[in-house]
Length: 96
Image 1 (cartoon, rainbow, N blue to C red):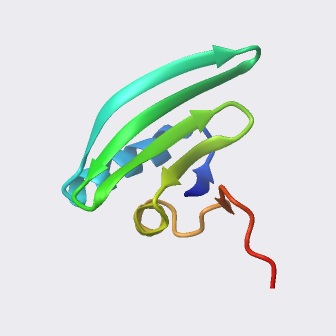
Image 2 (cartoon, helix red, strand yellow; image 1 turned 60 degrees about the vertical axis):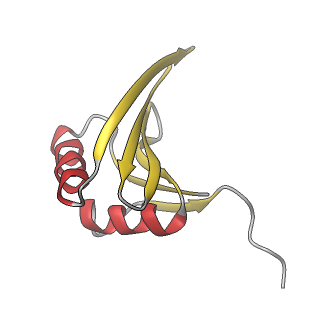
């Protein structure tokens, strides 16, 4: 699983670009779940694409991120934000 931060969680223009690119790829945003934990808000959007499903997450102190299958996340991230902020993986890389 990959998690890439695209930008600020309150960047409406960035979110509109995300929606437009999802639609351009033949996908849709199919669901939304909002949670609050202390001072941190988080909203998870389910994204359905022809190649599978991923999530867009807005979180206080983190930003707007995409998470899911690396190939889908990276493809969409490149289209939405040519220079995503923080590429991360859910598991640590294997030691050499």
